[in-house]
Length: 462
Ligand SMILES: [Zn+2]
Image (cartoon, rainbow, N blue to C red):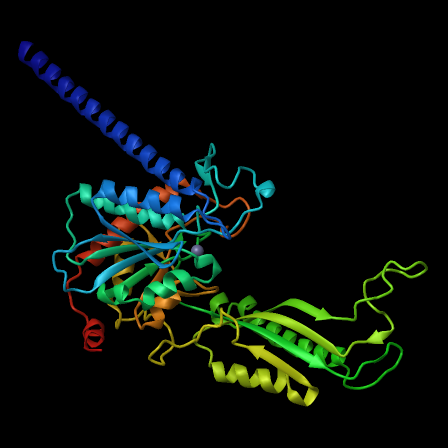
């Protein structure tokens, strides 16, 4: 009996040890998760809302994080008060093109009273949802890059390629003093970037969304002029009548584009979207407030001599811009109807093509190894990637694509409602933590990829 007893007690001792070990592991895991979430909250609590983003505080925070990770950091102000924070994890083979992980530090403003939890408190509710402006767009991504690097460093991983992280200002107001200046700078040139990762969108289903291009904003103002006349008279070529004909024509085009989306023939990013955003016409009433008159603010018995309408148009890189401009000149604002238009004088007018004259599109086929590597890496970390899409709005990625560089838009948020720029923007903490693992896998795959692609070679020759 004795030997059996001894065996049993040894077994239970082992069991106990094992149990204690897993408890400690679990404790450490919970502890580190709590720390990760708390760092995310710290970043979210910094109010970087436009138009007065607190960039000095966000810069301080990022630089302090870089220090704890042993990353080199540099703060560059291409425009005073608009810092680009650049972090560097040097690779073992520094002559290989580098990897750039980009994120913007600013967020859009929030209407505080419409939020369940204050937008800069980073409140974590019972379900693990973190409510904050920037939780999806895109402080999550910026910090997930850093957390992924923390994880990789702890595991002893050393990159072959140099990994850069850029935290850029002003994306929400066009990125002209941030990513645009950065992408055009000598500094950027010297970094020899081979691939850029930038923001994507949340996905309501289990597939992560990946973006390989984006639509370009065209802001259009059409103006009609015509003879003024009495409000009771029917005559041709009044400004209002001419403007309305144009609006009807544009509206038909809009409906046809939207029908293709509704029928499932095209994705949102593949059609030209047109939305009317203002109407300006009428003769202000001098009788306003005068006794006996109904105060409408406009003269009611006069047909005005000028009328204007403004449109926000988004053009996919697959659309021929000349075709659209022709349509504009011939149908939407024809001079035969005394119409004029303004397009391209706006700071947001962005060319559909890159500086080499090619559509600003990142390949998702065999010609671009970075795309398949990303797909592979996400799969390896238990994630799924949906069909690549064209981003419906604009991101900083366009400035990198404009240089002819591949740029992929990707924010790992699956099973999450799309709440960027919306009230009560939130991200679930489990989804955030999973995203870190996804980035660990991507960064590891990218940074150890030493195959020198044909694409990189041809770029090196330029
Ligand atoms: Zn964004």
